[in-house]
Length: 137
Image (cartoon, rainbow, N blue to C red):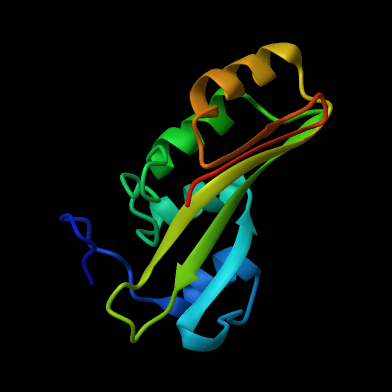
């Protein structure tokens, strides 16, 4: 299975669902599911070739760049959540794509500043002391 580039995606949907949902498929109609992922789940999806690190949702940063933000800002008093969707076989566009990132909790000022400088031009952008969100259409 290939994406638009040369990255070969792993077609083991059962393993992919265990990583994403802890068990059975959450596919909605049309072979599509929306989900929230932790940085650890995103890393595991990349490691198992379910998520192409160079994949991007239209004008969003690449999946690896979003994960780098999470890894450079370890959670503690705030959580980092990736908004994503999964496409299921037999659709030809089988993949997992990240379309947004949220921070929830007591976000330190320096993290808010980094978030704003990196993501302020997202299609949807919100920034508060205890919540931040960037989402790309």
